[in-house]
Image (cartoon, rainbow, N blue to C red; front, side, top):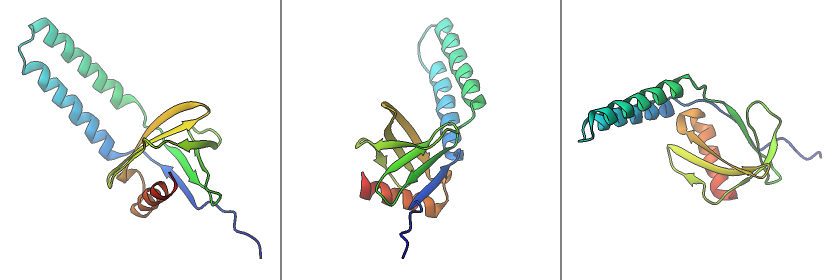
Length: 137
């Protein structure tokens, strides 16, 4: 009988509407905070311009999808920016919640952090990711 070598978990992490809403909310709150303080008017205008510029920059940046794979050999790998799969090491600083995974990993001797909101995957895939991370990191 042949051994099944198919990946145990193969995920395409897509852009998240939750992440977009969070970024927009943070920019709006920051803009309001600029005007609800006692800073001089010129500083308020400068900070407001920076926040508006940051908001436009963030809205124009495409959220890059990436692939995440966990094999039946207990190995994690990722494909970032449409590149080939590279082995990764999941760090113990990874945070797992029911609506967000803050994934810290090392790839090619550099540390990478990716936010994976629950709407970036199907419900079943997100649940499987949480289980795989809790068991194997």
